Length: 614
Image (cartoon, rainbow, N blue to C red; front, side, top):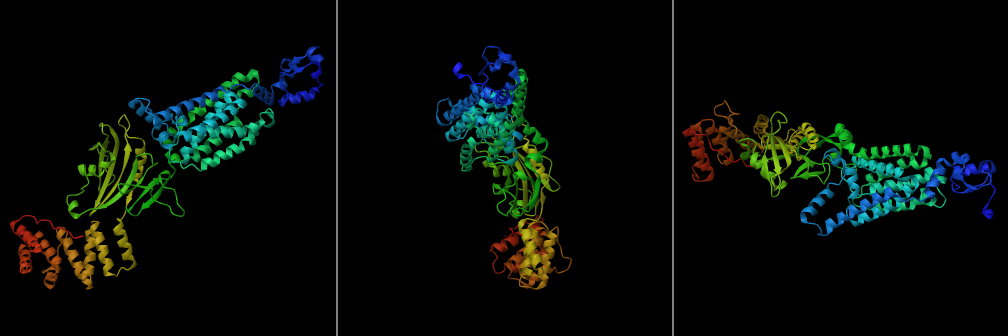
């Protein structure tokens, strides 16, 4: 209309068009270009270059206020699945079998190091966006997704939104996989990425945004971001790695993405294909994290550290991700226990773990060798499968010389093998060292890939002194001339099966004439009586016979002497000492035991075992 016409400077008009300050449907009359007519700027060829400038294209797109189809569809999908999850978990709407199946699917929606690296859950990065921990988790996420997604797509179009959404999830999953052990669920990783993109769009496009919409981008969202960030810090189970990864991924994508709507119309189809390819590549990328980490385990599990478990007497190499967090200056060797044994697992949610342990057994238990085999071993682990069974299966090769391997399949109540238990035992004296692992069994019967990590850990195990022996050695080293400490070290050596060293120390204390000599003599003689094939004294009378003559009231010494003499076939000497000591109490327990040994000697039968006092 004539009353709305304004003279313009053509150079100024060109600049304003390039900046997106003038809409393309504004009318212009310029004789050399339009004759006597007013024509829309978009129909004037001389202005085509200015209207094809990125800021002009952005402003034109945003002025059209297109409906954000892609972001709305994704937000709606998350809302529908989240609502279904709430119904399944809180209402009995579906048949029990269907509810159980749906609940299992929701549980498998977690993503993180274990699902991707070991469980083959390549779908989990996107499935995790659909699963939430309840309405308080779901509803705020939907609000952020709806608002941020709407604004991102309004600025960069559906193609740009797809790239940013995919980059947000890819970045969040990468941060979780590399930074934390626990798997995660929830669309907040996507929400933080979109919110970061809103801020980045404001910085990137700046004045190219229409003035009436500029406040929704850049600094206009800092307050919202601050509120979300502060609230996330207060969440007990919040994954800060997921939020940070999503934020970084979405922000970088918003700064770099070549959104199709920013391309001239002639090149827009090519830009659209390029954006879709980027979105597809970023969508697929998280599913490749697992195979990549399996090829380079140290990247996902972090380099192994050699740790010492002093209460068990072993050292082993543990991947850094399996070690507990350092508290203050203290670096702990393990973060959990299983059946009282130190254990390592990637997360608290999984049941797969590695363990090391040591047991001090009764001498009567180890006479025939390792007692923890077969049904006895299964009974120790019975709690692994309430209502199920544990059955022996093919054992792996032994870990090394002296080790014995054992394996059990853990079956559930339906008889399906769920786990494989592998143990290696090393029996030294009365100490049984145990190292092993529990690992999931796949549906095809193969062991879960975790077992490769666990096997490397077991291969690195080095067994040292049992704790009691290590303590006795340290105490003896401080004061090696102390008969009490010599005696304690001899006891520990005997318990560990180093009988010759123990005997030498007992003899040293006996010959020293200290108040501990009598005690040492009895213990030395009991050791001889338990392993008569290893010891003898060529002197006649033997050292202990002289001592038995000198200590007729020492019942422990007398019993051990009679037992040893009987075991060596010196029946007459055994009867002599038995009859001399049985005069005062022929029916005492001590006399009955020595009588049995003498009779066994004279009858040619092996002497019955005697209990060893603790």
